[in-house]
Length: 219
Image 1 (cartoon, rainbow, N blue to C red):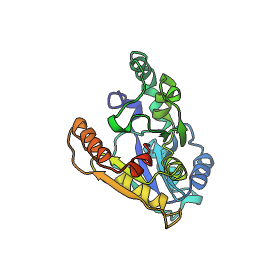
Image 2: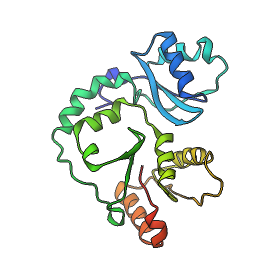
Image 3: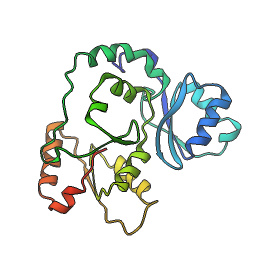
Image 4: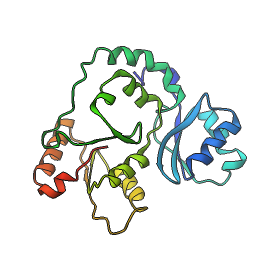
């Protein structure tokens, strides 16, 4: 749906600054209708998302001069106002979905931390159309979600994906906590099919000791 929607075309740029500074720059330039924070990955690590031209205006504004930034390799402005163009079609698809409680083998019953809300969520909160619409439009509150995982005692972090991007972000966030925390990071580095990825996680979880398994949380 995103690829077919021309209004979703835009850019995403990683910026080494705080959310408050970047948000203020968006407002000052007057482009809040086309640019927003797409992700908050750390205290000084955020992602701008939206119209390519308007992102350039934000980055060249007085408050952003000299701030390090890097364009991401994407063709769509995910988690920005530009995604509104595909929401109706997405809602139609979601309305055909029969939402049920999540179950992933040995992980069944694990507490869930949402990167939409940056906090722990219940099954009922995520088992609705509006939650998944928010996933498209709202920024990814990754740092907040990792902070919550740490606060509730999570000692094992598993990234399910083709590289270690989220593992590196997690390490950055967790570095702000006690250095005595015993943390283990697993990354699934292959571009294998999803079913193989899930089998990998299932194997990792099933071979953990009971103490480690009890600390496993999911973002």
